[in-house]
Length: 491
Image (tube, rainbow, N blue to C red; front, side):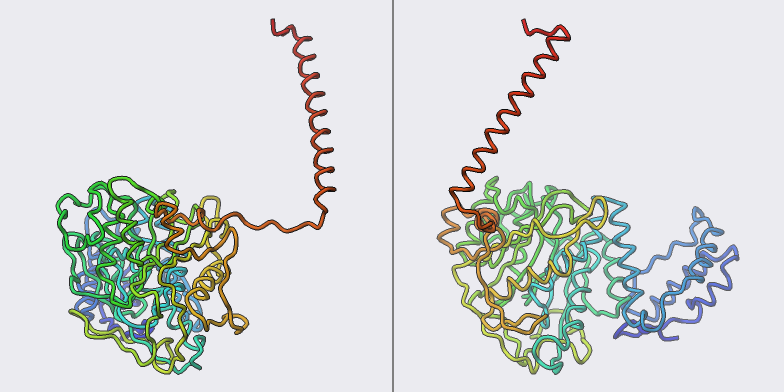
């Protein structure tokens, strides 16, 4: 039996097929049968070798409950044919990851980055082609969204649907359990990629990789990353990160792996934009002066399951004078890997009409998105598709002189909007001590003119103030009288 997952085909041997397990669900040996099924799938599908769990026969597991679970799943209809074509199984997997993250709190953040944040990062840097890298890939959400982006825009990037795309996926995850989740997340969608297991700082599994696109959500402010053992690491070109905080270790690791025309988009704690502790301010200054910082976005709160720490998005670009070349480009030779094939009709390379880039050397775009989003539940906020489109369109209008609106098809141009976005020169950033907090640059939101003449407004407000002062005096007198009646005279 062959199981088709989007663009990959997995062979399911007879002992691993669901009807076989369902028929044996009430047998006391069902745990061993499930383990045998997992082993059979791994045996016949090398991409899953060492990934699937095989501990269902352990004595501590209630086999009656396991059989009941199999019966329960057997009665679930996983959508009709149209739903299955839309990757319903992958979405179910993602749903359980998000629910796990919500239930586990901080620990759950190791497995899951909110979908809206991933989508915004991907929409911003548009990884149509080339080498895509995530040095702390968690459950591979960034890669899944990258491939979805290509498929979703197969007819929408001005190329009439003629474009093809090739991407090579590289990721690394230190947590073994999370690494297995990442492998399964890709496999269930038929996405091929090289996901290595190990500590990115101390055992970089792709030392020679130069990525066209980097997407990441590093763990915030980690102190036990072994920085004291990496004092002279060649990755620290812009300054040695403090041993007590890995934030700028992650930043410089990603800069180290960027190709000459590469772009990186990643999540960091808000403190990274302004901290001057332990040399972090000097590292940030060096990054700004090297003209690597392309865009900074302040995010609304309550987006993440793993932390309540306010977060921001950094975008770094090696060459801010132009856009990455799209026409006819295919991935260059990369270490230890082969390209992931994306179906015909994907967006991005051959046949694409080139877009003209605005030369943004010596400038940084600041976007304050803290007022965007809606509450998805009592404790978590999410960015809507409209919010994501607004932010991404602002960035792309700033980057490109020939960008067109996805909705209307009309050309769009960039302009500063008080309270929301500002294109700042390096000289302005120097005046602010190389602090990159968007609120310092975008200013206050413009207030609409209500049409009331100034003199009339001042007379009205002055009269309103006198009325409020009189009311306050009346209330003070009433309170004093009540206190006196109760015997509290204040003597």
